[in-house]
Figure (cartoon, rainbow, N blue to C red):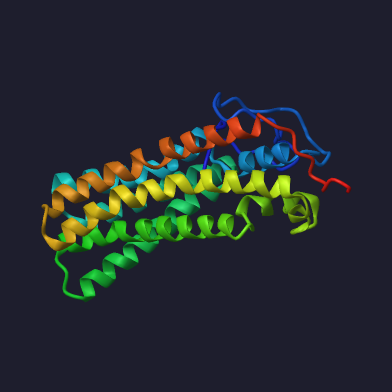
Length: 259
């Protein structure tokens, strides 16, 4: 889940917990002290987890190339090869520049899992269109599982965002002693879940309709390829903007308040 910075990743000591999530400017202030508010902790943790504009490109390019190649040539293996080659090229550039390979590696893992699903579809006798549809299935499963996991963690009052706070304070569950912190982290966790829910609600019916033959597989593949990009970073940024708005409203101490 991700936010634009500069595309270059700072080390944990170089990332300001007050870094802007919208300007894309790189922070140069070193923060060695542990943030004293939950809002600062979450802002800092989100900043470290996001790939910046460059991360957005590295995530989108392989999918765009796969979709474009398939739509133009209807050659599944070529489409997969082109997407993998693009990801490998981006990885080599990262290695030469000695910058983080995390986001390119994530893209490669996603392509690899997609290829596995394509192979499974082929082994079951599916034609190239069925195999191309299978390529998008892991993303749908991932978003569904992630949405359920985030929602359950918030409902059970063990919101996932709370563990971001615990990872900084060194006490993984101490944040649960303060109901105000639990409430804030629950709201933020729900906001993280929204993009996943939207992707599932929009994309799954298209995938199922194509699988059932209700719409042309080629049409569905094109739509799914575009939606994977459109509902990726833009939707994630909208959710993160909402989180930043919530984080800017209050100042919740990291340490539980004394009775």
